[in-house]
Length: 126
Image (cartoon, rainbow, N blue to C red; front, side, top):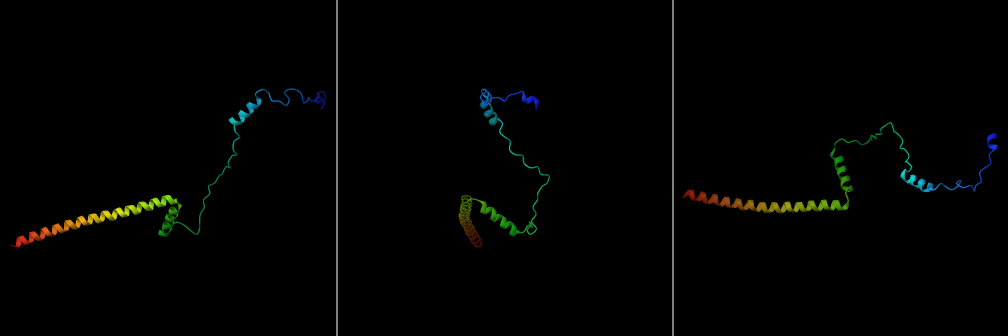
């Protein structure tokens, strides 16, 4: 009203009107870097959501466990599956070879014990 009538508008060419103070622009830019705008706040929830499936429930059956193992197997990368299969094949071959060598040793010991038993039994008859 009456107070504003006595004032005259500032001219646009007046120093300091449109130009920032010395160092003001740099200070404003550094303030923006130092204090970034905070991300929007997540909505506050007063409840916990639990999903219940009416048709399928875990009853301890082997078919459910088998399906679960198959899903886990399929989630492995191809490299991981190949390493596991190679390891199992290698261990199976090592097991077979060690069984064969141990079985040969048992057979040899069994034959020597039989021959000594036969020899000792034939000597006792004389």
